[in-house]
Length: 292
Ligand code: GUN
Image (cartoon, rainbow, N blue to C red; front, side):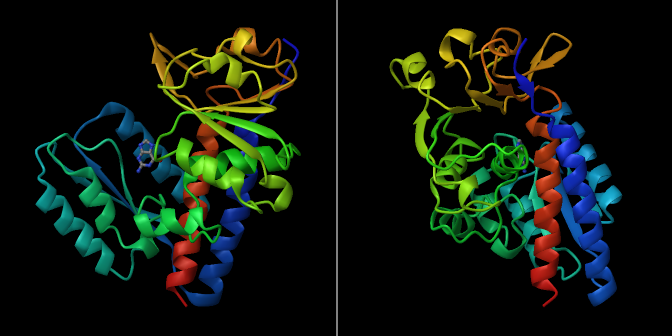
């Protein structure tokens, strides 16, 4: 293995310490205690773990969190009623509806109902539009984590060929938009890329991925990207979290790709910890804006 390992876990810890300081400052100045409402519908085991991790991270940063559990049989109307109640609750600053939702629930309708000022996932159409126009209110947590990791590891994106594999609303699409902007979360060198997005209908995928100076993979398929799909010296960012037997693995075949890439994120311990850190950041920002 020759690639530098990009340690998302330690970067996330640094960011969380920065946020904890800012939370303490906000409390001191305004008396407002930031509070995140997490809504969990049903018993999906992975979602339970994610929500629990978010609660623990909130507590460590001095952010309050409230968990709203609803049964798997919940209707769209029942969930909308809860969202409405949280929208109006002045003690709640951020609302997170954990996905996936049970199939009987109209997910789009629920996500659209979250007040944009409390939409810490940045899933609401208004917030997606603001990101696309380069004037974000909130940045979506996982894409923001990718940009923070690159910037804090001194990997510049300006002028580089970035290839994003995956076009999801949560990761791929917002990442494309963020790489394309004239400035990023850490300034102009943290944006301004030449961006290509590949997906399940793309032809000659390996040909496209081999062009990348920076390859970001978010398709949810274990070990999908192999060494032959990566340009020697490329930076490889693996957003995948897949269960393979009793192991958690990424979308990148770490073993082969780490011999050819110049830098690579591990799974676990790469982008995952940053997603949670950026959720805390958005909750702090929401509380700050709503306290004015
Ligand atoms: N499920 C998987 N990823 C996410 C995410 O970023 N936000 C929410 N709310 N649910 C998810």
